[in-house]
Amino acid sequence: MRVTHNKPPAAAPIRRPVIHLAAALFTCLAIAPAIPLTIPLAMADEGDHDRARRALQAGEILSLRTIIARVEDDYAGQIIEVELEREDGRWIYEIELLRSGGALVKLELDAGDGTLLGIKGRDIQRTIRSDRRH
Image (cartoon, rainbow, N blue to C red; front, side):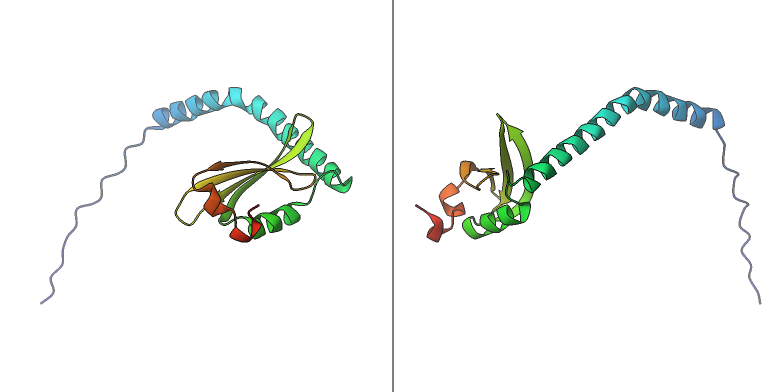
């Protein structure tokens, strides 16, 4: 004996094109004023990148590879962020380390010679490798 189950036909989806159109228009109008702001920011970033490259080529700053190697040798923790910034006419590497216990430590290094300019965070003494302490 064969049993068949008759399923009722699926209800047709209700279309609301006017609502979708209004939502799309609202989104476009909300985003439109911000578009011109993103163009100069992108151009500014490229300018910063070019200045940093020229500083490296001119020997004004150490390479990122060199800085990372020094930080890994001198400090305990995983590097999670590196920024190169120009402050008061000086290039500075700002580096964030994540320690094994979850503490964040921020280092500021002179980009020209790698000298430590500042360090912030918890358990700083435990961040500096024992053979590197003065």
